[in-house]
Length: 247
Image (cartoon, rainbow, N blue to C red):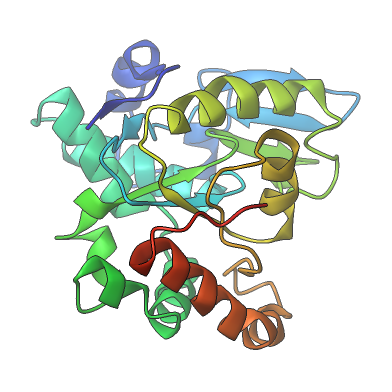
């Protein structure tokens, strides 16, 4: 348990606590929380307080980037839990805001179908966002909210690996943080996350074929159905036989 390598919470905590609930989009998307901007590529990056890392996690669930909805939920959780110690507060932010909404519901349903809970000794993947949060590290390969042309960035355009600003976040945040964990199973949410991880990893256990759980991904049911049995085999190999899932 701990704080991510490149934590910026100390720089933004007081600014977040100065906000009044309920939060509006304009409360968040302004110069107070802007980290970087590339006008030529139409990219903006805003601080998101997902600064907690679970170094004991057996499973890492990796999305692309927090969206505006998750960003708002995270800021709200900071304000509502300000009485806690910093580490406890940031843990509550993770539990309350990570993949929050319909995406979390879809994610839980797919993980349950793959029988991940059986390997972790829990009744449902929903427990990973509550009483069994010690088993998982939920994160994004781009740790802060990225917007392309003022919309949530979906990881496809511009290409993460070919965009220096985004590649730096991936290298200096996600890759460094994962190196602190002991050989976890990484579950990339969607093809764009998988492609980015392909750039860095050759021998890390990474589940192949998991679709992005967003409701806007109209192909997720077909993708999941086509890859389900192979993904179950990979998970069985990782947990039951101690075999690595090689890229």
